[in-house]
Structure formats: structure tokens, C-alpha cells
Amino acid sequence: MTKNEVQSLNLNLKSHLNTLKQVTSTRKIKVLNGEATLVVTKEKNISTLKKELKAHLPPYQLKRIKDGIDSPLYLEGLKGVIGIVLLPDENPDYLHHEGLLDPSAYSVARDQVGQLYLEMEDKGFTKVHLNGLELDYDELLGSLLSIELASYDYKNQVTPLELSASYCGELPKEGLKEALTHATTIGRAINISRFLVDTPPSDKRPASYAQGIQNLFEKKAGMSVTVWDEKRLAKEKMGCLLGVGQGSTQLPRLIHLRYRPKKARDMAPIAFVGKGVTFDTGGLNLKPGPGMRNMKKDMGGSACLVGLASWLCESKSEIPCDIYLALAENSVDAHSFRPSDILTARNGMTVEIDNTDAEGRLVMADALCIASEAKGKDKPQFLIDVATLTGAIKVGLGDDIGGLFSNNDDLAFILQSCSQISGDLLWRMPLMESQRKKLKSDVADIANSVGGFGGAIRAATFLQEFTGDIPWAHLDIFSWNGARQNAYRGSGGSGQGVQCLAQFISQL
Image (tube, rainbow, N blue to C red; front, top):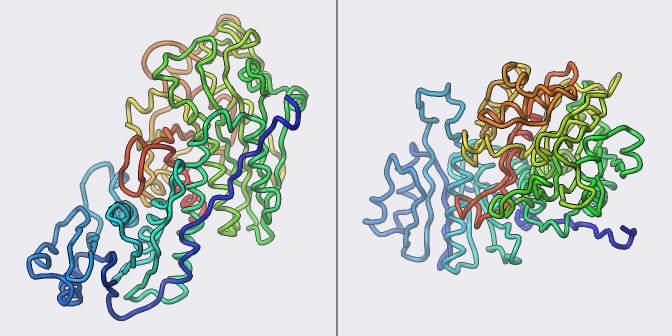
């Protein structure tokens, strides 16, 4: 491929919340005449809410505002539509799973406000005013973020509703400003991730994907970008990554995003590794047609980490991080790697290929080696990888809960707690030596797969072989939203993992 054939992805997405200059402090709810008003508050404020809206709603509509409403209200007011989200005063105690799967007030606000916003857009309104009544910081943040998520549409250039917002409560002006800034940065990060997953594979082949990422970050303060082409990969003995990508006309790339802000904390960095298989045919073990249909999303782990990198820069995080993205295209060609081939990973381990459709763990293996080899001040305190690795995890957990595997109980608990707070859910799965034994090979150190149940666990135990002695976690995610729901106007990339990992970094 010539240099002129490499087209760069444009990742400079517009932010809807940037049109909202501020969330103004107010003493009363503001209602738009003839337009859409959206009110978010807690159940304990129902009497105040009814008093404020008495002049704007007929009595039968006021009666609908009551305790226990678990979905948004869409009320026809006397002078315009009024949408209401009532958040529970306290998170419900479901008495199971130690609360780690419970909806947080942040996630409820995010989902229900987004749903109402899209409904108001469908009704043809041109303006919407968001009222936050006695909300805490996280609830206001979720409300604002939902509008940023709802404004995204890959196919059509959405004309967002003219947005204004006010807040009545105890948060100071500095808190309101911070919530708006945070909602803008995390919303943009999620939407970048969604955009990358939605982009057709013809437009995000390894070289063009790498170039787009390089263009996005090369001028960002604190961020440096290094891209290894196929020659450098061969020099660095990245045999697994090269093996997966050798059947494509566009060969693999490894990207290293090194984030070291001026005000970086004096601490060891966090290392992240993302799977970036830009399209997965399954290789010679060809996927069936329906299974291949959405394999443009097989780079969802890398998309998550590109979004996270954007958030690091825009939020001016003080946490040093290293992000490694392994990019390859698993194609069918005379040069494609074969079942029974033996590939040699960066760390010298030999891998017998049982199935060419278990390629994600191969590209991740070499990148995990690179991340775990860092020395001195660059040696990571944690190593976290993100990948759309197995269909098996979806069978077990569904499409909106990611599988969490870890060799460190403390790291696992922190990540799962952050997933609950952010409404970006993970559930811990076991690592079992019995599954590692099933990957035995008679001709190599390990096989890349084997038939039978427990596929997600075996994939995770395979990855663990390349993580060194560093506390490590593996997130097996789906990256895809199958239908319109909550703040998502349609099917497509979900941005899974971005909110959880941003929350994780924020609490360090």
C-alpha cells in the first residue's frame, strides 16, 4: 500500500454540550412556553415540584407525579410539554450481589433523561430547558451527559435541540461548572468510541486507523504517540500480531499512547492494552455470514481506550498512563495463517493455532508483553486490557455487562465498584488452572484455543501468560448496542468501558 492510499479517520467530533455555556443557578423551575421543559429531581421533592408546576399542569397531570415512578413522565402542560424524571431518594437495596449490579442515581438520571430528550426531539420541539432540582453532583452529571450521548448519530447529521439548563439546589457555581465540563469531556470520549466502532471497516483498516489516532493526539498536551509498522513489529519479534494480520493487504500496527501531563502525580503509570482487530472474517476458520455481519466492532477494545485517552487529555487528568493498541485485520488470503501453524510471541512462547478465529488473544498477547516489560518509573502498577474477545461471555452475561477477570482481588473489586457507580457494568468471572491445562499443545508451549464450554475463561487464562508479575485485569466486552434505548437513538457502538475506566482513574 502506498502512502497516498492510507486515508486518515477524522475523529474531531462536535460536542453538543459545548453550545451550553453554563448551568445557571435559579430559585425556581423555568418552564418554556410552547417548547419542551425537562425536570430532574428526587422523590422527596415531589411536594415542592408540584407547587412549582401547579400553574403549568392541569390537576389530572399533577396527580401523575407521585412516589415510585420508575420511568420518565411525559406530561402535556398548559403552555408546553413538561418531562419529569424522579430519582429515588436513596439507591434501592436489592439485597443481592452486594449491590454491585444496582443502578446508581447517576446511571438512572443518564438513562431516563436521555430517553426523554429523544422523545422531545421526536415530537418536533426545537428547544429544551433542563431543570435540576436539588440534585447532587453525580445526578446532575448524569443528566447532562445523557444529552451529549443522545446528540450522537453516525448516519445523520443531527440538528440538536437548542439547549439551556438551570439548577436549584446546594451545589455551588464551581460545582455546576465542573459538572458541565466533566459531562462534555466524558460524553465526547464515549462518542469517539462509538464513532470508531460504527465506522465501516473499509475506512478503518490498520494503517488508516493508526493515522487517525496519531492525528487526534499528536498535538494534545501531555500525550505522545508512537506507531510501529510491520518492519518495526518484525524487529520487535511481535510474531503473533504479525501472524494474525499477514493475510491482509494492509499489515498490522501497534500504537503506544504515552500520557505524562506536566502535573502528573508521582506514581507508577497505569497500562492499558486494547484489541484492535479492524475486521474479523475468522480467517481460514471462516465465520458464518450472520456471525461476520458486525465484525467491524471487533476493535471495540481499542475504541474504548481511544475514548479514554481523549478523556485523559480533555479532563487534564494527573494520572500517568500508557495505552497500547494492537491493530490488525483478520482476512482470508493465500498468505493467511493456518490452523496448526505455530506462532512465536514477543516473550518467546510458542503458540499452536487451533482456530484462526481465536485471533484476538494473539494480537493482545504481544501487546501485553510490551506493556508488562516496561522498567523503572514506567513499570505499571496495574495492567488492564479491554477486548471484544469472546462470544462466550455474551452467552453468560448478556450484551451490556462485561466480563471481568483478574489475578488481583483488590484491583477486581475496585473495577467492579467503579462499574456500578458509572452504570457501565462488569461482573467478575473466575480464572481457573483447569482451563489453562486444556490449552496444552503437543508441539508448542500453548494452544490458542480448544473446543468445549468455558471459552471466555480459557481466553482469559491464555492472556494471563503474557502479563508478567503485574496486577492485571481483563475486560471482555461487547461494545455494541442492539436497539434504541435510554440515551441511544439507535443500534451501533456503545462506548462500553469508557465510563468505568474513567471512574477508575478518577478515584486513584
